[in-house]
Length: 149
Image (tube, rainbow, N blue to C red):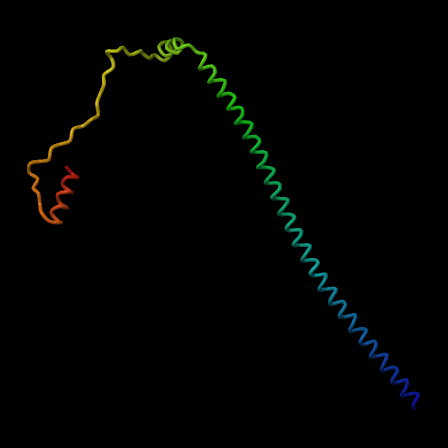
């Protein structure tokens, strides 16, 4: 019996060792599953961020190209403006007058055609019917009457 009890104890010890080995394996699998989940989440976050960065960089490139096109158009407009300003300075005043008379049908005004007009308007005298009222309410009425006269 001692052999049997020794064998039984051995089997029990082996079973306990096997059980603890299985528990350890299950724990390792749980840990590895948790680490796999966190790795997948980290990869998804990285993918989303990198996609956002790519789209933002694409938008920045588009805006940069629009800026370059606008700068080129601005430089052309400045060049054309400078050329036109130079042409205006080269044109004789008599040429401008001939164009105005012949093409546009304008007439040059003589000294007698010009009349000066003054816009200084004299102040109106206060109406004779206005009565000076004393006190706060009467003063308010007088100021309102002055506004509307």
